[in-house]
Image (cartoon, rainbow over all chains, first blue to last red; front, side, top):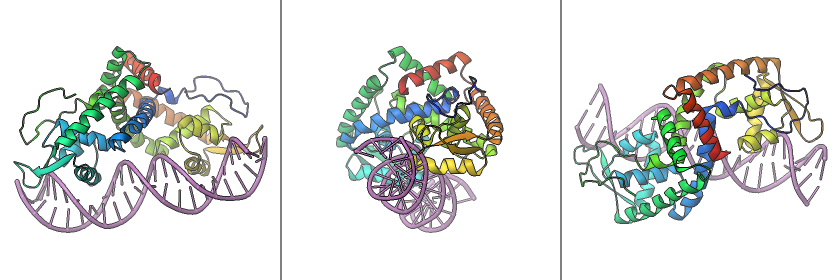
Length: 154
Length: 154
DNA sequence: TATTGTTATACTCTATAACTATA
DNA sequence: TATAGTTATAGAGTATAACAATA
């Protein structure tokens, strides 16, 4: 499994990470952490302090009337951990809870005009980040990267 | 920014995730979470319960004599959070601390014969996971995916 | 004075159990 | 009986501050 012979030198000058770099999980995680780090820095001005905050707000804007259950299912998060996120967005006046038309147990989540306005800016910033963070990738490479990632997890 | 017109229908049947799927951070994170989930399931037999556990053990095997400081730098983790990991590997008899040849403050981390034996199996399992988890990708696509991911974060 | 390794500790994120209201 | 939403709480992961030993 080792890619090169090691000497018995007890000190390491250059760290060999070649094995880890063969793993999809390792590369995907490192990429996600690096990109999200910059992402969250830029989202501070919009008062989003976690990727879930942003993702939930975005999904509500693009899916007015979506339920908590649907958000949990799509984003792979657990219902108890969504409650605070939705409450936060509601308290900020970005979304609104309304009775669900077909299910008395559920609540439909809808964006407010303020929410729509803020998310338009936030999503524009997110789109700009894509260009900046993947500056070493061509437009075609970016597209390929998305397609291959989605082929794995979707 | 919206990719399609929304009706005023208050209930959502199919959730539109098209915007989030244009984001590298979103796709990379979803992929990492999905792959690591399967990874950790298979690593239970080797008693690795986090990706950091495995990564640290792997780096020590491939870089005998590496220091804690170097591990932190390469993996992007903080020194206080590495202490428990190294202690755990040492208690399991997989690695050994030895005085560093050039720096009296540091300790060189070395794999034991048991550590080498276990990591050979664990890394073989990890390599097999790559084939399984990316079954919808060709060998060429896998290689391309790694290259593009590393182009972003490296 | 700066760095390695460490302890203690706080904060965030994620997971489980149990409850209510409705299907 | 099952599901949507919620509360309380436990656990894992990640962060900062401060210290001893050595550079």
